[in-house]
Length: 115
Image (cartoon, helix red, strand yellow):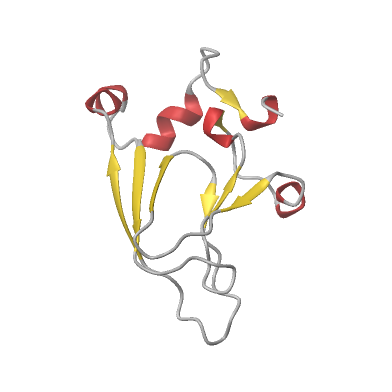
């Protein structure tokens, strides 16, 4: 899955900018605990209106709430592309993440193995 974002507002710590865990695009993992998350390499993505971002949809990412009481947050338009083959791998009532989290063939590594 490829996520493409068109930024409508500036993304700063005050407005709640997108943050990613470096290296998490290489595999899948359970969500880290708050204590584990503090040890991971988090990269904030600062953007201006009109900037375009692209990332693998399973990269661990989040946009925390604004830190400024005056900020209303930020707006972005996201478009996702999912290859048709993805849907062939999913069973009834399964989602994209269900397939990634249940693979055991050794092709998808956990983030714990990437460091």
